[in-house]
Amino acid sequence: MLDILEALRQRHSVRQYLDTPLGEDVLAPLKEEVEQCNAQSGLNIQLVIDEPQAFDCMLAHYGKFSGVRNYFALIGAKQDDFDEKVGYYGQRLALKAQQLGLNTCWVAASYKKVPDAYKLSKGEKVAMVIALGYGATAGKPHNGKSAEDVSNVDAQSPEWFRRGVEGALMAPTAMNQQKFTLTLDGDKVRAKAGMGFYATTDLGIVKYNFEVASGKDSSVWA
Ligand SMILES: Cc1cc2nc3c(=O)[nH]c(=O)nc-3n(C[C@H](O)[C@H](O)[C@H](O)COP(=O)(O)O)c2cc1C
Image 1: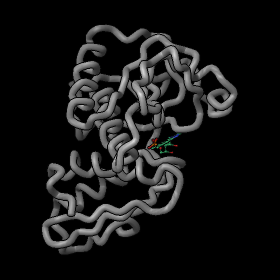
Image 2: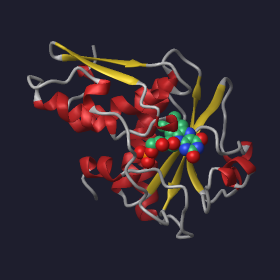
Image 3: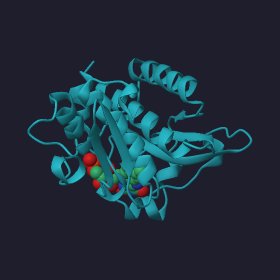
Image 4: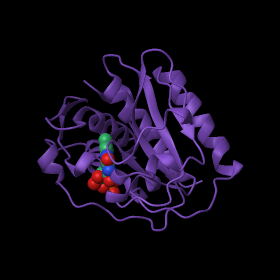
């Protein structure tokens, strides 16, 4: 299995997929990871396999999606930190998929809901989905902000903080908006979402990438 740091670097949004079905070799570890994420977060994320309808709609065609038949449905009951948790645990699943040789794309808008494809308990909703499969391409790195744009990194910053910020800059954000800031304060980091659509979900994604790239766990957050 690909090293997680390498998976973080190699992950780019992929919108066109091959017909290759997902075998047990990837499904078993993905299901296991979904279970762990749900147990830790209280979310009810579901892996939807062989369901082409969600991406057979105007929005998906307009968004240049093709061949999407599998996705993670990011589901849960609305709670205080729901949006951030969706980001954090969704990115954990996206990186696991990348480690297994699959490609992904976070999708909040360019799909349609297919109620028969998952089970919603009372009070739960689908926040968004992550398309999943063997990509027709590997995607390409996004352009974006610098470490100085999003953090207080400087020549004196510890190496782990610099690495964490670099990992955060490789995180997917809605419309590549990268509206977050990371501020080192003593040995803790303050992570803040800016204003914008899905900025709190983006923050959860960014925090997961930061932890992976810096080697710290969630105790790093102020
Ligand atoms: C919360 C969120 C929602 C997104 N929604 C969509 C979407 O509806 N349609 C789409 O084509 N891409 C969507 N994306 C993908 C972003 O456009 C993409 O992550 C960003 O441009 C950075 O590119 P990268 O993922 O290749 O690094 C979304 C990403 C995130 C994080």
